[in-house]
View (cartoon, rainbow, N blue to C red):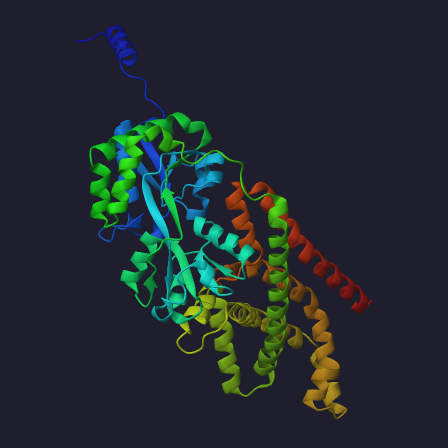
Length: 491
């Protein structure tokens, strides 16, 4: 039997002999990606939605195995992967991230492990007419925002009248192309071929517009980890493991084989194929775009609020003065609109009703926001109208005034004075909610700021500038509201 002293000595020796537990980061490789992007990059496993699958998932496993770690996936929005890896939220970002000069200027970037082609998709009837971007003239061309394809479209729009249309996902551009809202879509050949198999209704032009590469992104502080990952990727290229992965996801072809051969023939020059150049997109460059986007936000908000006020007045009047059937229908409208997300309503208006009526994006945005806020405005007006003292209404009826005259001369003016403050609050809220319309391709202030922030690799300056513009739009409204309240106040 061990004595307490002997047991303590043995325990101390065991602690000294045992390896010291390392930090969690050394035991696992945390990698970030966006499962919303879907296959073949990263997607939720249909058999077990808590797991992810895709060729980027398998590449993360290869890198983790080469480092002697366990991979752990962290979900992050695709547009935020680069900022999140620099913050240290995870060790490496992998989700179809494109190799760009500005990316290498801000982060430690791996060797390009896949070569893709930017391809043009058009409707079958336009195959011979729109073979290149130069053929599209003043046409609308869609793509994902903050991508190489979007920058190509911006550059082309500076030379011609081409209209770039930015999307937050890669599904709706092709849906809008088939529906006739777009004349072409420019995206990676992997995404284009996947959408063609899934929905059809368009063709892909053979000649690529540009060549691009997918890379893994590390924080600047993790250059050593990046170098280790590069060695692992090159080894997996040599032993055929990467080719096997790409073949299993049907993204391997002769051009990829030739690219691997070139990369392995001179890996050192390939790693430095894209030079560290200064980040594109200074504040001066983006200022005109932000001003235009602010103008779109202001016009959109004014039109939507005008619709909300007009419809809200009619709804409030109908609920107070209308017959029971009208009151019931309007009550259902108010409760349904207030009880469902405005984002869902925008999708239904723009995409869900496209088979019945094909609304332009801006018109759908005005209608969506206006009809949504009309439900809230109607409750403000109804409460204000019902707040007027009943003796006043009875006195007006005694004087022989009709209900319309009472509303116009007695009830309405007083109710309006009560509603000014909450109306102003709703207008300010609507200006901010206008940022949601980017999901239906309207590039307003927040969307343009997100594009700016992605290109410069930081939200500090773009975020402060965006906040200042929003304040410049909303503060005058508050001053006007306070002025009207003081002018109409009753001592």
